[in-house]
Amino acid sequence: MSSDGLPPLRDVITRHGLMAKKSLGQNFLLDLNLTGKVARAAGNLEGATVIEVGPGPGGLTRALLSHGASRVIAVERDERCLAALAEIQERYPGRLEVLHGDALKTDFRSLAGGETVRIVANLPYNIGTELLVGWLTTEPWPPFYASMTLMFQREVAERIVAAPGSGSYGRLAVLAGWRTQARIAFDLPAQAFTPPPKVTSAVVHLIPRLEPLPCEASKLARVTQAAFGQRRKMLRQSLKSLGGEALLEKVEIDGTRRAETLSVEEFVALANAT
Ligand code: SAM
Image (tube, rainbow, N blue to C red; front, side, top):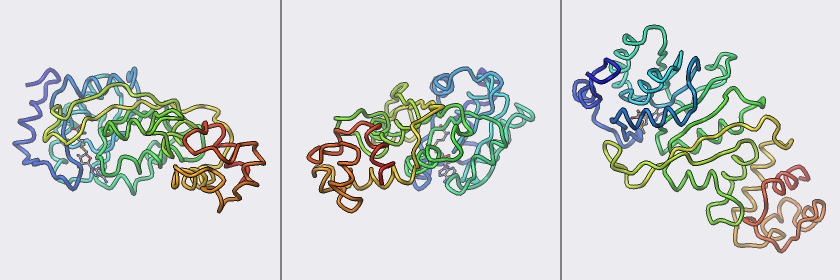
């Protein structure tokens, strides 16, 4: 038995035949010390409702519950995991809700049911960015969550927290920087997972800004897509389809600059001028 009174995760995996499927981005965290570390990166969970994507065999789910979350709502696509998750439901009666479905088709705001939740997940890498963009562009704002604590490939984590001037700075950093304060909490080596992925992972913690600069997410997406789509070109060239030099003059940005030199505030000004 583990310290939470449930069987060790390796036993759970063997008993339920949970051979990892690559197509579902399954790299499991089986060390409860590590899942505990992820749960703690989310802050004090006492009394919190947490939405988790991809609980798998339930390592992180167990940590969230043992760290005081009053309720965890978990969305899992793999039917094979449901029996393992049912054992956790028995151990924590009334505190774990499991939805069998595709996170990409889930309306998370409705799932939160009017409560302000925390989102905590060891995300399947193939859909992590898409889920994050969905949560960053949700309306209305402030959003239905108080924080997001998410595991990504280290390279993606760097693209989320990147500052202007860095090679990782791009659309994701502008979007995340506009609406949240994002930081990398810690790295996890590939060997921490079963099976190990090819790359290092990192946990990113994002807290929504209560009053981000007013802007329409779709306009910001259009401007950053054009600017970073041709990131080596000068802005007067890359933004030609959106007004080029005339647009840049409106917001007093030098057309010879390149996308990666612009601050989030400057991108917002450009978006608002389109
Ligand atoms: N939370 C577990 C852990 O930390 O060990 C598993 C994490 S694993 C990286 C990703 C999980 O997401 C897997 O359990 C996988 O089945 C699930 N998953 C993959 N695609 C999904 C989708 N579209 N919707 C919901 N869950 C998905």
